[in-house]
Length: 392
View: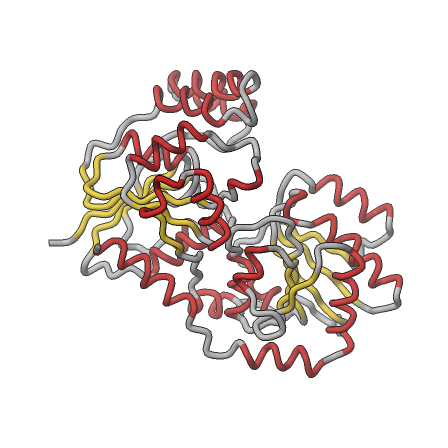
């Protein structure tokens, strides 16, 4: 008899966690597993990549990620008044709560979101916070696995220690995606140390390589091309990327830096690009459901983040055997072997510009990094770790 599995996530937008989930689903043996996928809403570009064997359940909260001004008319028209209440109340109570009001939002959501009636052999929350709370409190399963992508040492406003502790107590395993995340979790919750497993985010090499051949992105430009895929928020270092690009251009190097992704800093970046007259050099492409041709045909891939868990975009660049430059932060120290699978650079303009200028000059170093990335088997190892959890 097949094992019944449930995966819970917020949506299928083009973020690293969502891509990692698609990769994992693509690597399951559907002769052994019957899989349901439950999402808070059905937004995102990745639905077409969900394996056909996966049963996608109706959304828990239509318009969960839709702005309230657009969501309310839709929900009222469909007479979904509980969701209207949730859409209005959750952000309202969060305003008067500590941090960003995660706990207060959940106090509203848990009263309006339906429980899952079906009982599963294994239920997996593939994200932090709301999906973890949902699996812990609203799902019946013989085994529960929840994910943690947070660095608890950072003390950011999302953290809810009381709610997290209760969730972890109700779970059989807590999966973190980096050793540094595990250590911060153990420091905050030493009593759950025995439940924690480190499984890095995985990607699908076959899918990435196939999609990377879809088109030639750069046309007649023959200068040096750099690509970054990231959410446009400060912690992902996109402003650092822009300042670094400006410094390299001032040094007289013919480059183009392509930034793929959406986020809160879009308008600020656009304004700064115009002010610096870099429109033809630092090019924002927005979100792309297929960024891989840009990655596959670039000269160097750069991830200038100030904070990460285990970066999926970097794994994708490694699959494509691209020279990778990342900031020298603990998660990247774990993910990249310096000058073997990529290059670590200090997270400032001077260091990053110097590293990239050296790579522009040194073709042999770029070629050596590419050669050293051939026959990369790291993703299959991570999938095997997860399947072992299912079978334990």
